[in-house]
Image (cartoon, one colour):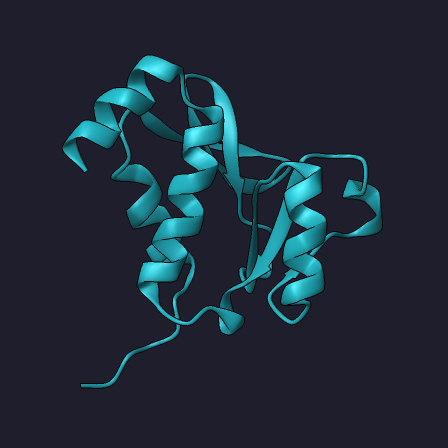
Length: 118
């Protein structure tokens, strides 16, 4: 069985499969939101995506896997990190990253209900 590199269609499919998630265009790119709070953006070239990530964790991620995670200078003050799709191991890793970002944006009650069903 061959595995293919995750792509922006996989991001969309996984994101929209999460409870109360909606896709909305912003800044000329697809963004995904839960309860009105953005948790994923997919820039134009679709080779990467951005997710929520506390700054202290972000620095550790970048230090451990700089080929996978990075932050553009204009986003340095944010609580977001970029992820290169080509560097992901598989769809499972993509899903884990997207779900983690969703949990940071979703209301607590929604997260609790999702975790019970997951």
